Image (cartoon, rainbow, N blue to C red; front, side):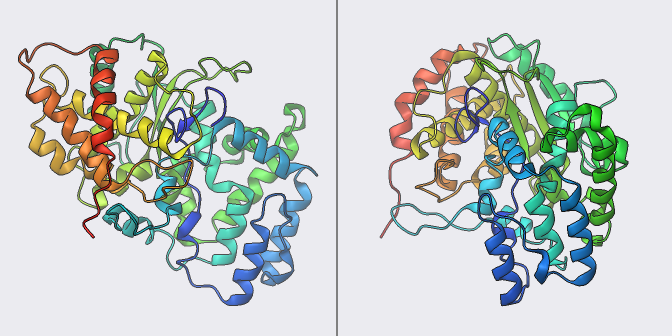
Length: 410
């Protein structure tokens, strides 16, 4: 994100997953591939002429109802709120570089590649082009709030665990965290009715509030199109919510009035369970995202925002903050071996996009940062003492060169 609303890749915030490398993995003939590739170029118009007749008719209908400059409005909103720069999107967009670092595919990458298998490629890309996969993120970001009625997980199975941990995190770290909200993100709910979806449509495409009928008409079309593809499960497919992120407007000269928050998507919780990390990974993810909130409060982001090195530093630091809390006797007090065995959620999301501004560190680096933080908690002479966040950062900065040093063996 820009300004202080940066995502984890820059100032530590995150947002929705883009379709990214999941698309090429799906079957599509050369004609379709050429059509969608050209349509993906920034500012380009979607070429509906190569779509199937039924889908072309729907696509033309949707495009006719959008404002003439809808792409510019959509792109401006995405840029302001950092919608495409989440660490989880990096799983899809990362390109394996076999150079100086050990980097490999992981179970989470394999899992996310299965989520859209068998779906209509043309329909998926059209939804991607419109930004429909971003809609649950906008909904949680703008319209979500912390509430006793909130549930976390597809069936609410993580509600007690994450609600309790959120309270513990606020007590643990020495920052003003009373205004940080922990908010769930559910996919199917967003697409449950035109009335629920219309405010998101208005927000994304810059449709004035007084023109609510236009937003409602588009919402109806989006819901109809999504339900044409059974794989999408009416928006409940984990792909829509495979995300968790922290957000702040601190220092933004043009705030949107959104409170500091952490959003936990059903999809990422489901993904962790699917790859066998459902034990402590949900808590580790929340602790990591709270680490970003500590960074915002302590002004630890730095002034090299937008470079691979800066992004990597921010993410590895959040990994360390999260693990320190999880293993500290006054935090979650989890056994370090248990945490590091299950906390491979961070190992799993490492990437090898060394030249990308969104580089988050390799799997080995992310695991090393967590291992180091666990040792800080476990080896402390006074087990009841919590290091001030700035002191912990000082220790991390000294350790960082060792964590990121090249580790290739050939």
